[in-house]
Length: 166
Image 1: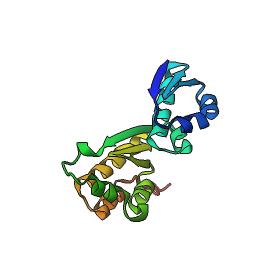
Image 2: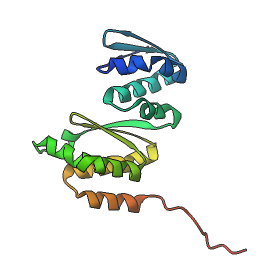
Image 3: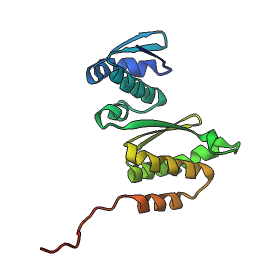
Image 4: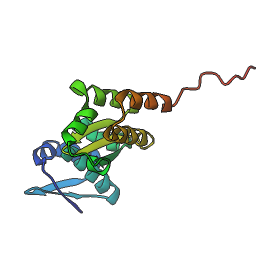
């Protein structure tokens, strides 16, 4: 049995039935404590999904941890900068009207969420490294265009012709 402290208890309780059905676990709560019981691997995935919901991800994005075999990574902005004006750093990550985050989502095929001084990322294990590197580059002051260009270059190119003629 795992016990998780939850600040977003209503979100979890609202989706309790769906979570229990999808994850094959039993969820109970006492105050802000959420208890998960089930098979150890189901408990682990349940814990990650509840962490994602607590962080602020929507239910559909959080449940992709189970459905798509995605992982959740959380970066602390303070680990990568000594700047005091963290509002400005967060603003760089979000971009004008959310454009930077939207572009990063398209290029990395990962989901992003900001909460306080943390950035949450949900994505495929092979894609999450690029997403983390991009966020870290933005935190350290790289231009958005440079980050986008590096992401475009690192994307896997589809193989169209092997040059074999029969």
